[in-house]
Length: 536
Ligand code: SF4
Ligand code: SF4
Ligand code: FES
Image 1 (cartoon, rainbow, N blue to C red):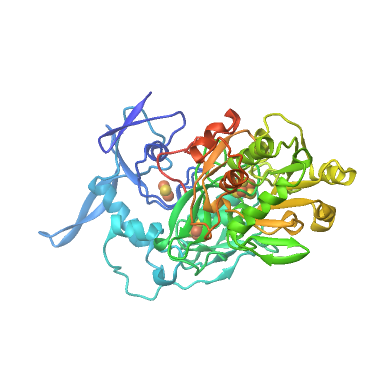
Image 2 (image 1 turned 90 degrees about the vertical axis):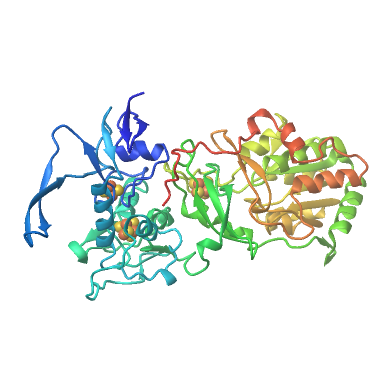
């Protein structure tokens, strides 16, 4: 593979590479603002200027202060090149840390901060802002300008999700390019010139496509903030777990950012994966974390005649008693396209070996508007993984379950909850069955019509696997702690089987994963694109 030398280090070149892209792939950071590996090259911030060694150096004429003559005299300095735009050339020698390059970076940084309000204490980007990072690494001096900064509009509502602060904006155009090139919606543009320029929304429009939160995410500074996250948390208090979005069958890789002090998730961010979501997520996916804290099933509940909360121990005893008195062959096993492969696999095994059940059904959301960017029209994260759990056995829909209940072929069910397309009214006939048990993390139709409700963990409180629409099995990891006494559904079912005197052969997560069909075994890590995260 051809290489070039960057600050003395050999860097491999792939066809079409710029100096920046080749360095980025190796995890070498050349300071930059406008470069983003998922967007076209704009080369407008000039933060990435580097020196390229050549036999015919181009010298820019300058004036230099001569202390002896006490006057400016003609001089020259090497012409620097933006690394994000210059092609990487075999055997070339590039310097991003030469005195001239460092001098240029320091001055570009000072220039970008000339009119900046430096309102870091109230800025949501503080702690992950490139202006802060590069002030430390490339500038480190106080501002020399003593005049009033140029003032521009602040807290401008761009749409339902995004707020813009023009004084913080460095006019890198990442947000414009994202809307144009990824969301395919030319809703943002730049207006005015020089230190007056600012981002504006197209006349008569709002920033309201399905990927608006990505504009905030690609903004390298605090100019675009998300109304969902504004003023909610300081990022240095947050910790991160690797997640997989449960919004649809694409399975975008995510970071789940949570505050361990409050056991609370504050946001989801895209995690680079070349094979799945590249650098992006959609708005619905990024906001799906709200379900971790809203509409949760908090306590086991009996809903059969009387409605009352009960303890986890009593709930398991009641489940055992209810299932034991029902003809196992007539108990429906309702898998969930929203639950992990591990949960579905153990439910299927529980049905087969503990109950002797033979009939399987699948609860699933009814679909939403997909697109050819990321969103899959199947808004369930794990339909493929749930179906793989029964290893080819026929799986009916909830309409089939209603018909079988009506005909008497089914006398009870045990279900993994989660969202389903059917309403509680449509499913109401199932409430008349002899036994109905739902294991759920969130409220929903299947939770409302069950005689016995057992809370289980959400995706943020457990390790698990989703298989996406392309058949890629991806693992996600626990972020926050579960509610006291609440376990993952697979663990609850293992405990229930033991209580019923028919323990499963599976005892822990490793054994459950060992029993997953080969199509549902996740690798745990995404196929990252570069050695360096692209996001900020
Ligand atoms: S709002 Fe952010 S992403 Fe858009 S041009 Fe300004 S600094 Fe760049
Ligand atoms: S496209 Fe689907 S998986 Fe990706 S972020 Fe959106 S909802 Fe989540
Ligand atoms: S990153 Fe190269 S000019 Fe902005």
